[in-house]
Image 1: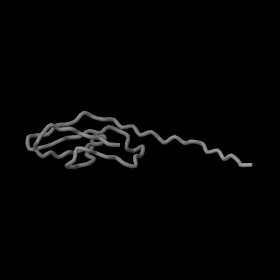
Image 2 (image 1 turned 180 degrees about the horizontal axis):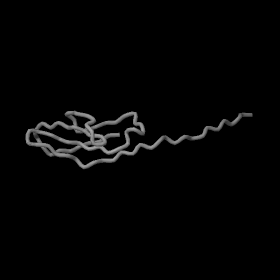
Image 3 (image 1 turned 180 degrees about the vertical axis):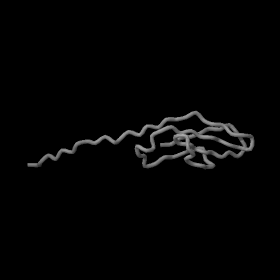
Image 4 (image 1 turned 60 degrees about the vertical axis):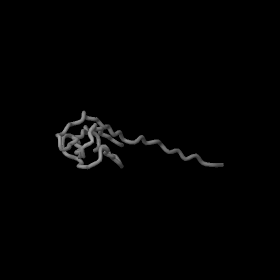
Length: 79
C-alpha cells in the first residue's frame, strides 16, 4: 500500500506520518509504503509536512486490511 502527500512548496519539506494519532515515520519523502500488511496496520493515517515557513496536516486516510480469503483445496484422484 502506498500513501502519498502532496505539498505545493519549493522549500525543503520534511514529512511526519502518523498512525492512530501517534508518530509512525519521519522522512524527507512524501510517500509512505507499507509492505507485508497485517490486520494491525488497519487504522487512520495522516501526514504533517513541515518547511521553514510552517507546517500543515493532511486529511486522514483510513486503511482497512482484511484477512486473506481461504480457498478450500480439493484433491481429485486421477484414474
